[in-house]
Length: 558
Image: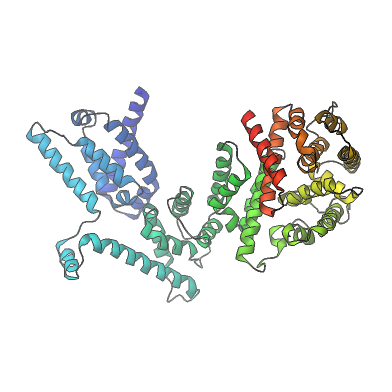
């Protein structure tokens, strides 16, 4: 508490000096300095109010004898009054200085002086006699006239900026770059005012023809911060311009998304989808330059976390939202797929981008074989493979991970011999770093497990223990190995789809989930399965009900 008091006193002296400098000179430099410090000053005012409200007015004057000067200087600074919640906090602070029962003329004078400041703040703008007479002559009261004046002024400037954007190299009709830069500087403290939105949008969309950016960095930062905090709402086109013109804003938005994902408990994929759409990232990513930056950040997150399932799931949800936005914005692609995925085969990207709902169910297996052939050619044929190695092919494939889940379901639901191409596809999805020999070994293991599962389907008795034994889950094999992850996911699919799998599902999952890591893996699998079924409309009522019950039960255990 004592430390807080010392910190506040130090801050008080700092801001008193700042306000004095701002008050003495109204130059471009002081205005710029004011705009740079608005957020910090508002936070200081908030701390000051928290301290003042615990004191009576006499204690306030004793503790901060120049508090009146500080608040008065702030009240007469138009940049401070216009910024966010500063006006409201100033009113709170002034109210703390009022003597509810003045005991002498000095206290009465102080009350009167504070009331004058409050009146000034509440009027927002002072009107001289001539302006007041003019507005009255037009039939406007100042309270009606000035908001209308602000709105018309903003719309006029926005219109001028749009014309400036369209005029191109017609220098006679273009707004001077210095004026555009000045407008962006003036807008910084006004950004959260609803009437200023058209001007903010026009500034973002208006591209100058100068070799360097003319809008102020503080403007970009303030706009992006206001978007993140939901204090303003701009169309996606304006947000795209912001992120294209100021890369740090796009990077900060991505970090903000990751922070929300990390700080939220039990992030189901539906919730992740809401976060992604709310961030506007998937919509803005229709522009290839933004998609490439976002995708590169996902790539780094994937490498830093060693392929964490949560990151893979987020990439897949983002891709689904991006594809939806792409289809909504472009009936035909304005950009080739090569601009979005430059390091992989365009034909592979094209087939993965297909909506499985648009493919007849009888052709799903054939499509999976085609995907496998394209991937295998890129990964194993060194003469044709990507110069950046198998990782690029895998990184593309995990964007559309629903195809891997569909491959597992197709293997379980088919009575025929499992196709080698589909086995390879799953082995590659779960073990992209495996060599050819190791991947072949995984395919042999999976084929054997599938044979056991088909035999169990024909058996008259079915038990969780038998299922565990048949799948080799009771051995000393590392449960984190790619082959074991793939086998576990096949078992979970078996429990959901097999005619009598529901009967042993709870017992089987209890045997499987013998570590917290595997429990989280099973939770992720069930959530992802339900999410995909909901999107594709292929969920059977019985399987869906069982999956939801199991998911809820496991979530209560962790």
